[in-house]
Image (cartoon, rainbow, N blue to C red; front, top):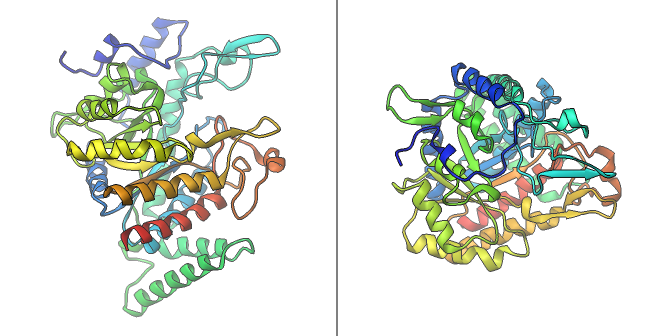
Length: 448
């Protein structure tokens, strides 16, 4: 079958809402298809080149952001705080790890979520599951949970608003390396932080002072004041993705213009299903979540379907196996892909495989288990002679209390203090920065 942006409709599809009014859905799709693209093909090609370097071990992918963005939390402050923490992490990884960092946010489009069940039942009332603000509302009543296609329009405009701010921040004072380092200094001066993090910050301070001594104007040099920042989300809701898929006027190729990078989830990566078919036809970098049950035939099949030309930077396998399962399952996958000569960027999602339920029924993730899976990821790559190319995190720019542990010792008892997620537990800003320091050590050790 010749690929077109709507041929996915001929394939089996999972994790889609059932809209009660199909005529309204078609009208919304038509409206979306006439709106400007959110990202541009040239930007996507730039990201692919950067990811190609990461796949060869020449840089490192830092991908992070909300589990699920919400319509109610689209303030300039919340966007700025997320952007700032990702930049802080990138500075730590760049300096300590000694490699450039590719910065990709789970931002400006991460509105749809796959669910383990189509329905949720509370006190005998059964309603459709919440699938993200682009589909329905989290409030537990029939009207709120009924899928509404008009929400796609709201998601589009909120994504545009977020992107507008990100682009301004990336070219303005918020991306200034000196300012980012000041924020990191504020972090390491906290009593809970290990002294070795202070030593690293001192080294960065000396490096910046050296640049000034050499005559570099750190307030005006573009390399110090600006950064590249890309967006990504799970391409789950295919009517939305189809409507924002456009032909590049320069090359004639199709690009998904809802984000620079798109990924397929663990639940929707079937080789003969709609999501794999759809994303096989766009030129964006494509991620695939890879859980512990994937087979060698499946990973090689995904390489065939999604990266038939074997390009560097095209396919990102996002490993999400869990701290206690990665050691038994990742090595055989790496060996198979390496022996077949397939080019894959490997990154680690240490969040999804480590979700547990606290005694008070809050879903949470333990910092030590998250770190354990990241360490195993690096150790396995060292043993197999392959490159640990990146990390993929669900995180907040605020100091929420959703994941336990870390230097600031969030406990199960304190989860309720600021448990604000729309779906799954996220690292808070302090935990994310702490993890960045620890991952930087792993990169440095791996490259030594």
